[in-house]
Image (cartoon, rainbow, N blue to C red):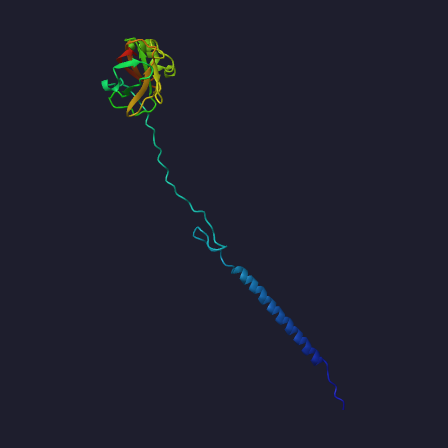
Length: 224
């Protein structure tokens, strides 16, 4: 008797295996997808630095520098109130010779009304020679026009003995008065000057706003 073997069990087993493989693949695929999803949700949070940054993901903030404003110095308005220049007997020679070679020096201390030496460096001084004894009338004329106009100090003054004094550098006839010290002129006297009594006048003016002067008599002799 021939035994008939059926194929249906074999087909069923093969089909079952196929279904099982597909199920395993689908399960594995779903697990992989879930892993990516969980990884996306679990992405590490960027680390916040303390101002200088920590690594590539560090948050860098700009440090704030606190500066203390510097205190501005308020300029004190300069106020010069000139008194007569102080010239003592030892500050100049009384007898002088007009020979063009002998040098002489006159020193004057420019002071304020409170008798203290000036501290300002912008007071203008001028030394000049005249035979006119009434210097006050010359400098006080026209409401003190001469000492008020510093721009004219380079020009000859009325009654001035023009060319009498030849100044030796660094001295100049018109120069800034020395602050906190004596202003000095060094000069020779031209041989063209006649012998006689003359007056050396020191004039100080601060911007034409405050001014004063002082003059001393000298005797000029001719060279033998």
